[in-house]
Length: 200
Image 1 (cartoon, rainbow, N blue to C red):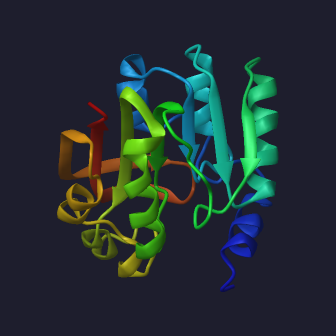
Image 2 (cartoon, helix red, strand yellow):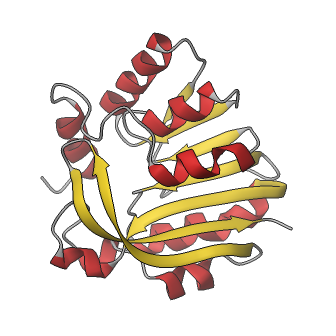
C-alpha cells in the first residue's frame, strides 16, 4: 500500500481508535504552557487536538486522511468541544504567517524533503512566543519494533531537527528511551526524540 492516504484511511477505518483516545504524554505535560490557536500536524483520529481543545484552546487538526479526521470530529463532539479539521497534505500546506500560538507534531513522520519544508516554515508561522512541540521516533526505534515507520528515512535524528528549526529557540531537544502506551500500534519500550522550541 504505497499511497500514504490509502494506508492511513485503511488504518483509521478499523474499529476503535488506532492510537487510543488519550493524549500523548508530552502533549499532556506541555499543554499548560501552550497558547492558541493551535495547529496539530498529522493529527489522525484527533486525540491530542481534542485534549488541547478541552484545555480551552482553539485547535485545528490537519491530516492526509479524511477517515481519521471524521473520527476526530466525532471524538470532539462526544467530549463537547469545538475542533476545526482540514484534510491537507503537508507537502504543499501553507502554514501561514504569524498565525499559530503553537504547532504540535506527534508521531508525524514525514519524508525528509517534506519535513525540512514544514520545519523551515515554523518560524514564520508561529506568533512571537509561539511554541513548537514534537515527539517522534529515532532510528534506534527499529530495534524495538513497538511502533512507527519501518523506513529509517522517516525517523528523526535530534541533530537534524536542531538544524531544521531555524529561527526558533530550542528549549528542549532530548533523545530518550521511554515506555509508550498509545492504542494498539504504539505499545512498549520506545526510542524517541522530544522537542520544545519557541519563536523569540
